[in-house]
Length: 164
Figure 1 (cartoon, rainbow, N blue to C red):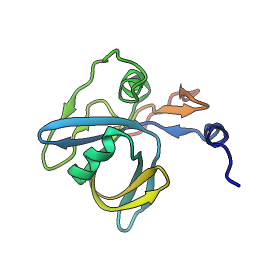
Figure 2 (tube, rainbow, N blue to C red; figure 1 turned 180 degrees about the vertical axis):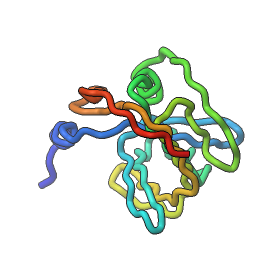
Figure 3 (cartoon, rainbow, N blue to C red; figure 1 turned 180 degrees about the horizontal axis):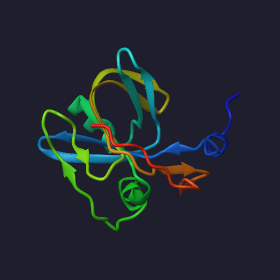
Figure 4 (tube, one colour; figure 1 turned 90 degrees about the horizontal axis):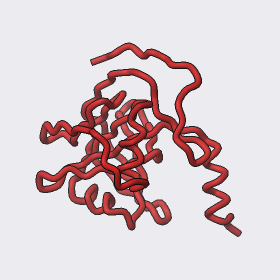
């Protein structure tokens, strides 16, 4: 017998994750969604995945776009995370950089990956969008974290060298 969804959410909430904003462009319009269901799958070939609920608007966007950007958020980007998670209507300052055919990049993110969808897999009420990473940029800094249903920061700041 499966466990209750709320218990699964509570248990998985004990797993600290980074926070990302997934971006895609369709017909010149940028679409974005906060996600922590993002995973590195393979180095050879370079594969990542994002899980998106079938009822989310972003699901249809990814189906149409065929590619997405993963923007790893910096600690100070919590307002951006909240906005694209639809936790607030208060729109923070942010800027997307578009360089077609790449997916839009969120300025200020710690890292950016441009990903081409290679497979769509069923995952319960979600779809797993498996993608090949075609481009990456690393800027470094302190990450925004998610734990126990709350946004968090590292206890002591770190510095990651910038790699371009």
